[in-house]
Every structure is written in C-alpha cells, then in structure tokens.
Image (cartoon, rainbow, N blue to C red):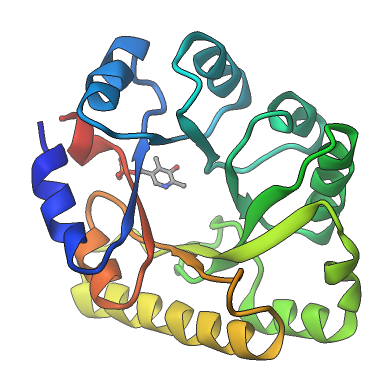
Length: 215
Ligand SMILES: *Cc1c(COP(=O)(O)O)cnc(C)c1O
C-alpha cells in the first residue's frame, strides 16, 4: 500500500490527494477508506454513480474525465468537484443541473498544457479571451469555478513536464489575480502517479493518483 508514502510526500505542501479509483473494485476503495482516504476520482459516469450509491456517504467524489453534457444530470446531485470543464457549453449545462438540484457545484477549468493533440482543455490564450469577454462566467450562480486542472505530456522528459506545470501555475496565478476571487479560486489540480512530485514542486494543491496507489 503506497498511501502512506504518498501522503508523506504531500504533507509539507498540504496537497490534497484524490485517489483515482476508476476500474478499481468497491472493496479496493473501502480499503483506502478505512485508512482515512475520503477523496476519490472516477472518469466514467455510470461507474461513478454505481460506486456513489454503494459506498459510504462521506466520500467526496471527483469527476476527472471528459464529461458528456447529457450525463451531467446523473452526478449533479452529489458530485464534489468536476475537474474537467473544457467548454463554455459544459459550464452552462452544469449550472443548469446544479440549479435543478438546488445546489452549487464546484468545478475546475481544464487547461491544455501537454503536447498531445488529443488532450482536452481550454487553450490558455483562448480562455483568457473568453474570460475577458464573458463576464457571464460569473453569471452562473450555481457553479463555483474554484481553480484549474491540467495534464502534462506523456514523456519521461522531466524538464518538459516541469516547464508545463510551471506554465500552468503561472497561468493559475494570473487568473486568480485578474478574473476570480482569490479566496475561492484556490485549487490547482495537477500531478498523477508518474509526475506528482514535480507537480507539487511547481505549486500543485491537488494531485490525482491512481496506478501508484493501487499497485
Ligand atoms: C487515470 C487518470 C489519472 C490517474 O492516473 P495514474 O497515472 O493512474 O495515476 C489522473 N487524472 C486523470 C484525468 C485520469 O484520467
């Protein structure tokens, strides 16, 4: 069990650990739960809903994968944080479902930092334009934009990964200063099994770790 080692790495920076439990059994989740872990992340809605219904109520569920707008309604009643908002349209729909459930949903805007073409997320310059133009981001009364999320390139090049995380942190600081309330815009979700130590060194406040934790 790697939980202890990982928690030790996160301790001094007070970084939140999201245990990425996609494809893992309920039993495996409960083993971590019994050790005190409460934040779990999933990337598929049906699996997320099934686990939410079966597992303890005080688990905080995180949606980390690309999210289809027609699936939001299934997680809107309980989701703790959506990491993967990559379009204005998605934000609009999350707000609508949150309203229907009479709650406010915390979300992160996903930013494209990796080199892979397929990586989802807002491009930094595009989002900046949108934020400048659309004060309406703030008009979504039932959505709280609490920060940003990004995934580094799949590479062993540590300098490359460091540079990507650094650029996301710089962008996060800029958004916090120019566009959001710094008190509530306080979460920077970056770092996975292979690169979380680099992410933490670059100012991550939340890491999403799967394979390392469950291996
Ligand atoms: C699967 C996944 C993770 C965890 O990846 P590991 O390499 O297993 O730690 C983190 N973030 C997202 C968005 C994922 O889909």
